[in-house]
Image 1 (cartoon, rainbow, N blue to C red):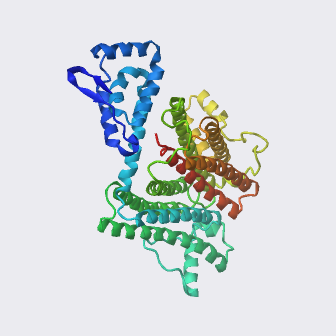
Image 2 (spheres, helix red, strand yellow):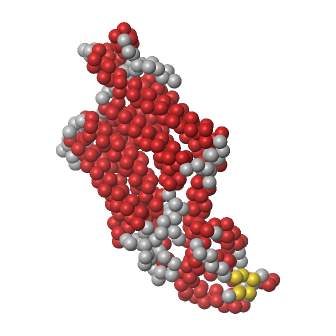
Image 3 (spheres, rainbow, N blue to C red):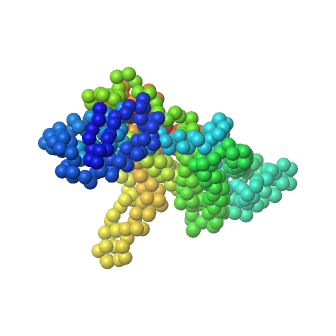
Length: 493
């Protein structure tokens, strides 16, 4: 079929088997061509096109939008890309979204093209697992109050004490700092050895990760097995590992300082949260890249899916998919924020108060949390603005408020995940690829399991095994949330 265009330019339909997966360059050119003609008025068209356009404007825009979307997805890119900006008007944002989605397989392929060896993806997977393990071990180190047992820091590490004299020397160094003087003055040498080995294992695990990343990275780069965007990302991760080690010692230093009067020797909750945030950032980046390296560019749709070309409800299903993607992104963000708020709970030992659920001290909002009485008095007295201090205290320093915030964020996260799953079951059930459906179900199950672990940790006064499982659960939940995002961006359109 041929359409006449001014100055004799002809536009022909073509039908490649899978436009998005196999003809990204043609799609990009088509979108550019369509954008170029967006500003053309209807009167600039040939008479036949103008009459057709007027009919669309009078009431058939939705049908034209559906036809154009199906044509674009079927590979009829040239004709529809030129005519759609004129015919559809309000449907342009949908086409822009389609253009954005069209670049995703190319992005994945560009990343994969930097891996010239199959060993690279297993290297990424292995080191990502090591990062998961060190985060959990760091939580155990915190829960056993072992983090301040090593009062010196050597970037390359050292062997642990081996002789009785070396152990006594190390113990004497520990005795010079506030934690021993104020909390552990009755500690024996054997008890010191126990907490020392937790912190020693944590530090040496971190150095092992650095070596497990740096040495293969150098090998792959020198042998040209790692190139392009993937090489740049791998080098950035190496820098992040180094920064994480420095942040860890910066955190420990805060706990070796003399606390304020009647204070408890412990690391700054701000530095602890920073240390945890950098660990989560490294883990998330490495895991996301691992997913990219292992997953195909697209997953097959199940038979009869409403997301298939030609489906009578295709346009509505496409909008529902966009809403589901938005909801899962918001849920993943809530998972991350909730995990970071847990770092402040740990830093303030806020889990050791209000060991009840769902209320706190008989109230939904505990006494002293988010109290505006003092703020109102300062405003009445025309004092300098109290809001910054009030917010900082209730977000990061008030133990009751910090635990309340964590409860509220956790409940919101479970509610958001549940809403996404219900929306999927109601609007897109049996429409998504099988792996995407499994990922969404796993996210729901893990969300409720993580909430159960958190409540159990609180009610049982933070025992180490359950609390460590709760921290591991936060990483697992984040991992599944990222898996969901990866699967949804691989829905073939």
